[in-house]
Image 1: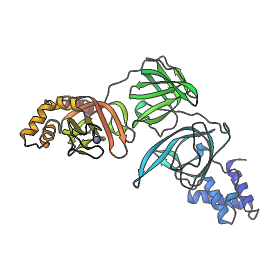
Image 2 (image 1 turned 60 degrees about the horizontal axis):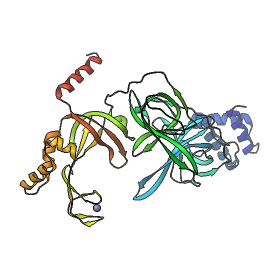
Image 3 (image 1 turned 180 degrees about the vertical axis):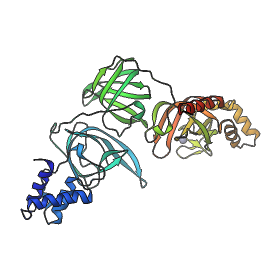
Image 4 (image 1 turned 120 degrees about the vertical axis):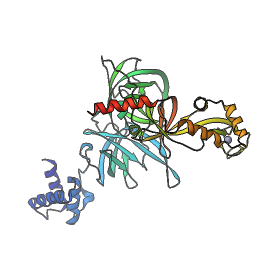
Length: 425
Ligand SMILES: [Zn+2]
């Protein structure tokens, strides 16, 4: 019996045989065609319209590979492949949001949850009732909402089809599900941690391919520097506002005899949106210098930037001078706020911290004179920057600059020419 016929039987039973099967078939097809509903929803619709009881429906558990965006009342049995949490501000209240990946024998799906009836851990098998689905970047996401019920099933009662999606490092995103990545181990360190009384080995480092780099954490699987690995069944989590690749003994790891050139080409800022990136190279033009750049004063105890000698936490303090720049870099696809530290700011200004303090003194104590010098030196200039880009829900993309270089206009002109050539001009 196929899925459709099974639905016909369910309706027949739920309506206590009041309607003929042929009539049910026609009605069910009509609901699917006219309302564009998935079979399961059409089935519920027909039953409730003709006075049947939908709560008694059996066998309504869905399979992950048949989920479509925009469905309500989704019941599912699944295994928790990964789970993480983060704090979010909702209407001024700090709320914990959970997110991760669920799997069953047909595939995997990312999920988010605001409330969980039970504390979930990786590997738990669960029954979910009354969840719903949303679209996320062209994929289905399962949402566990306020009216969703989650309960634990016996261990290993759900089998999981580990189906990985091949991806380049630049594409990796925490909401992707399981991925397959080919990359070179650029750096690795081993350490041991105790988890539930068991000592486990963790290898953490950096993996690179021709599109970029990503930090990784490998549980119990030894990873050697210089190896090119094909890792299937890994997932992407978030660490310090940047994506991180995580895998363990359930992943398949193959050594690949192939050289990978970890390229130094700048990536588009657009590709960092909503996720950040580790050690990325970007090129763009400085379009703005944010206030609070130049000479600033910090609380000596907590490092907060102060406008007076009163720290909101430490009271009256003797603020310490510091230099920094917050510059907005735009590459035509998006923008990041690049943050330069004292040493980098001194280099850009061509002045030491002491010289800036003297300069401000000469200008009757007005520190905005330094910000003006920064603006004069940076605005409208093209730059190449390398650093870690953190994604912050409130402030957007922020890069802690590791290396920077001003590009000359000649270089930009050459690049534009090359681009036009490639486009056939
Ligand atoms: Zn303080």
